[in-house]
Amino acid sequence: MLWMISKVASMELWPGPWTMLLLFLLLLLLLVPVLWGYSASAKYFCKMAFYNGWILFLAVLAIPVCALRGRNVENMKILRLMLLHIKYLYGIRLEVRGTHHFPPSQPYVVVSNHQSSLDLLGMMEVLPGRCVPIAKRELLWAGPAGLACWLAGVIFIDRKRTGDAISVMAEAAQTLLSQNVRVWVFPEGTRNHNGSMLPFKRGAFHLAVQAQVPIIPIVMSSYKDFYCKKERRFTSGTCQVRVLPPVATEGLTPDNVPDLADRIRHSMLTVFREISTDSRGGGDYRKKPGGAGEAGL
Image (cartoon, rainbow, N blue to C red; front, side):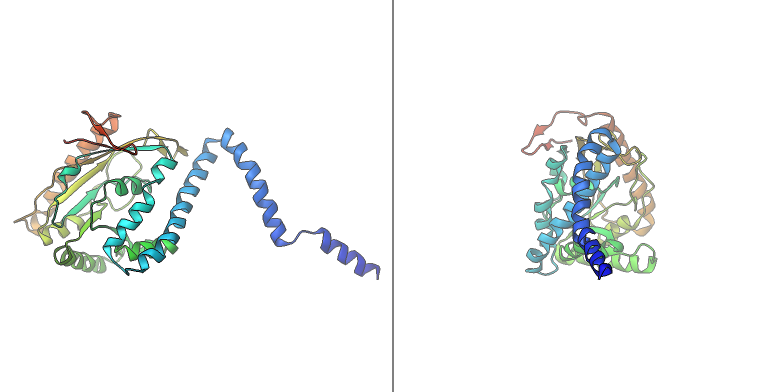
């Protein structure tokens, strides 16, 4: 009898799993303000966790809306609309120039430098109509974000299987022409945190030459003033986004691709260095609502 009483008493005193979870969350809420005030690393991890978590949450909201239309590049407008506000949450000012270089009514290939997941903010700021990114296939399995991207017409490639990647690029070339779609490619192939640009992979340039459509280079300035993964630093700041004049591919063949890729990389690297050392990117700009600016090259 005494054993049963002691057993019941221990069960009542020992908190259940939900109580333990609640206590853990309360402890976390108490610790976060303390760590926020004394640790830059804690700020970095909290900001990145919220950034990724918020994007997943927005993807959950976007899925039922996009599903009404099915897989369609027009759904990218919905994703863009839902993501544009994130720059305000983090105090990131995007100053954009050169959007008049986007051809108004034809397909083309956009190539841009790739620094971190924050590139999404610059992409959404200038993303033209009927434009979708080419992304690594792993993103397709990233839960709600992968499904939202699929519904928005994002093109997925398996970088480990060269044959599949070439096949996808060939299909993308046909889609460009038949459906008047534009694609956004990060030709470095992976994120680059070293303050420069990695050598360009040539898939995007083969795609443009095969479809005989222009290439639009876009350069985003270095994030080093407000973001550094190595230093665990993430503050507010300004990013320059420069849209460069289109590069024609009419009459070019696959033999011209290496030189084409090198020329475009050189021009982009020159602009990257210029706008990364000049907080205003050179020249005057005209302020736009929401902290973006626009001026011609």
